[in-house]
Length: 318
Image (cartoon, rainbow, N blue to C red; front, side, top):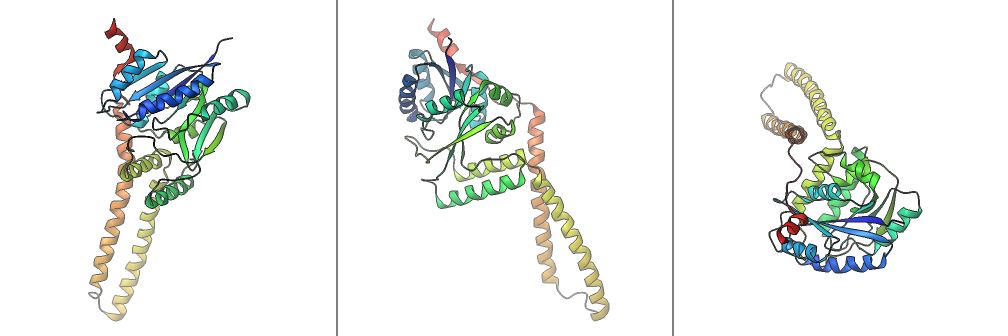
């Protein structure tokens, strides 16, 4: 009987400190799962440290290790898509190299997927240890907002770490959009998903590449990608202010006819002009976000560019 093949996709960006530790831990799990074959696909997302050399070294000594090196930094979403596209496994999983995704869960995930009627075993963090107060607050607000305005549910605390069937992966690859938000895409394609929970894990090495502003921009990406409610909201605000303006025009005309003082109140008028101008710019900004995403999609630029893979390494060694 042929063994199942599990593809493990690991995006990396300046992770020279974490890669050896991850490789050591994942091999412990692989050695326990003797009835399954594995391929490790590392994605070097334009790293400027020693990440690529480490991946070359691993690929030259371990046949199950593959790597894809981008021509520059294209972002984690591009790395995920590249890994899914290049994977060959019957089952595919995504994991962070910093070990915030516990590799020990992989055996349980595979057992459930094989023995129960699921297409995906996904994970979610039930705690936010190590997060600053501001990040906890905004994270909580984000999940409340996105699930109210989007028809695609985004599970609170959902991680990219999940084990998927080949069928689900192929469905995800059909969504080749340039502006990607994987958590939303995983939910949008559907399929029967079981959720496993665990406590948030700290990084084993290195520093996070996600600061507050990058996370904020990423959250906006998800809202624009999976909801058109902000456009409706801006239109509603415009309608509301038109009604208010119409009412105020009537009030001013009546007041002028009765009291004969059309000049009084100019400071409040200036404040109103600033308020309305701010609302207009806000609504234009919302429209601009959707227009910018549409503009990028119409360019049909590649999601990533591959500079080197383990196949090139084999050619150079001949």
